[in-house]
Structure formats: structure tokens, C-alpha cells
Length: 222
Picture 1 (cartoon, rainbow, N blue to C red):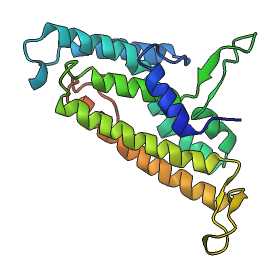
Picture 2 (cartoon, rainbow, N blue to C red; picture 1 turned 180 degrees about the vertical axis):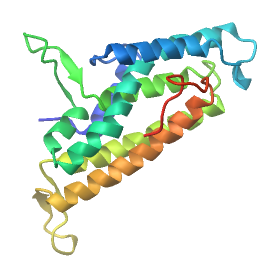
Picture 3 (cartoon, one colour; picture 1 turned 60 degrees about the vertical axis):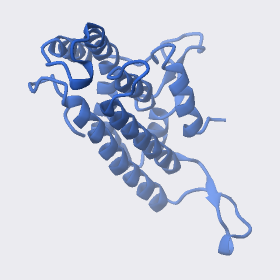
């Protein structure tokens, strides 16, 4: 039985502190991440990190480490997801927010995070890199709030892809399980897309405040 998204998000939050999830990263994404790292060294130090070489180093490391997975998830959310919603491809969407088996693993034991789910941990860790260990910066607070909103969007997206949902029954009585209608699926998916897009844009708006305004140095809104 597939785990609910809420449980997977909790798992991602814990696992991301130990290791990055495995996702395929293209050369294009990697080159953009390296460009981010180089651009970060040109940025003026933000108010919370003025004079701190450790924080500047952390920023460069964080960009090189987390940008590829964030890029991959953002591109999927802005491009592939809307097309899949229009095509009612709920199976593909569910795979993007779930944990499956890496098709490259012949033994079928290595897990692989869906492209959307795989960006949650990096989003959280990247946001945290903008704070001292014992003092959360306002920027980190804003970014983590955006991540929480994005998680809520993923739970709504899960409703669109679920095989069954709770049926409240007549006047709230005699409830059970039912299969969502096509209209219910699309409604939840569209709401999730709008809510998640707003959350990601709020996150990127704060992040872009620290990046050089140039091609591939800032993250485009979704």
C-alpha cells in the first residue's frame, strides 16, 4: 500500500538531513547549479551574514548541492504537471509525489523519489542555509513558510490522484470510501497547482534577492 503524501513529506524532512534523495540530474541542471555557485560569490553579503566567511561558504555549498533538485522539481511543476493534469494522467502525477523503485536498479531494491517529492528536502535545507545554526533569519522563516504551503499543495494533489477518498455519505452519515469523479480530480489538481505555484514563487522571490540578476543566476517563477 502506498504511503500517504503527509507521511512521505515527514520522511523526506528527516531523510534530507542525512542524505540527498536520488533523482536524475541533467547536465543542463548541473551547469546551472555551478553557475549559481559562481554567482553567489559575487553577491553582497546579506544583513544577517555580513562579515561571516562561514555563511558565505555555506551559501555556495548549498547552491551547488540543492539547486539541481530544486531546478528539476520546478521545471516539472511548471511544465510537465499542467500537461499531465490536462491529460488526466493521474498515475504519472502520483509517481511524481511518491517513492518508487529506481528502474536502473536491476535488483529492484533501491528507492527513487518522484521528481516533485524529491525537491521538498532540498527546499528546506537550502532555506536553512541562510541562517546561523542557533538563529533563524527572517529570510529562512519566509522560505520555510513557503515550503509548508507547498507541502499543503502536495497533499491536495494527492487527493486528485488517490484511488479512493472518504465519502461523507448522506448528511455526513454512513460514510465510507469512494472513487473520486473526474471533476473532483481535476478540481483538486488545479487548486493544488495554483497553491503550489504561489508557494514556490514566494520561496524563489526571497531566494532571488540573494542572487545576481542575470541569466541562469536567478530562478524564474512558475
